[in-house]
Image: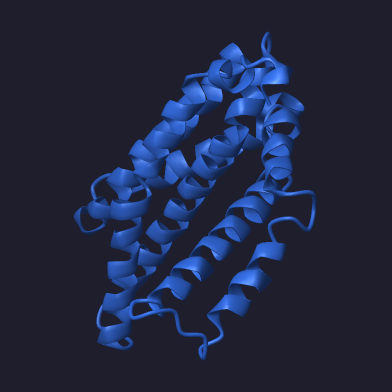
Amino acid sequence: MGLLTPVIKGVLTDGGFANAVLAQQMFGGHGYIAEHGMEQFVRDARIAQIYEGANGIQALDLVGRKLGKDGGRAIMAFFNEVQAYLKERVNNDAMNVYLKPLGVSLAHLQEATMWFMQNAMTKPDNAGAGSYDYMHLFGLVALGYMWCRIAEAVIAKGGNGSAREMTAKLVTARFFVERMLPETATRLARIKVGAGSTMELPDDAF
């Protein structure tokens, strides 16, 4: 819980605001209209990102404090849980469309974690510069894992329940792993460039 707390706080509130903005845009195609009240939802969602010091602080807490605590025991427990889940379902053809993208993104998270271990101890700026991307990379993997579990539950239900609802769950899960989960590659690439372009400008350049 300690490891995941900053991920939950940061990723979900960032996502909540982004989705409120997207919902606002849905009502703007023929000149902005206000009767649906979406602009107030956008304002309300924005405050959640700064309640505890802004989400950059959540990211710094994750990488700077939570990741290495107790020798990295918590992050290793997370890796082991997701890896075990994937391994146990390796021959489940119905789940492959969900499991394969999760496996790729989990590898990205593991690579990013190892990169911090190798490059942030002697240069803490690397951890700071990559922390926000790491938080969102972690969040994507965690959400991908949850969507796999949801899809598995729907498939196990078979013909029980509403076919329309079942289809919607599976399509949404597939949308997430196909359209959102690949973002982990971009997050990893940003982390691995290090802090150079973030920190090299002198103070008087600002």
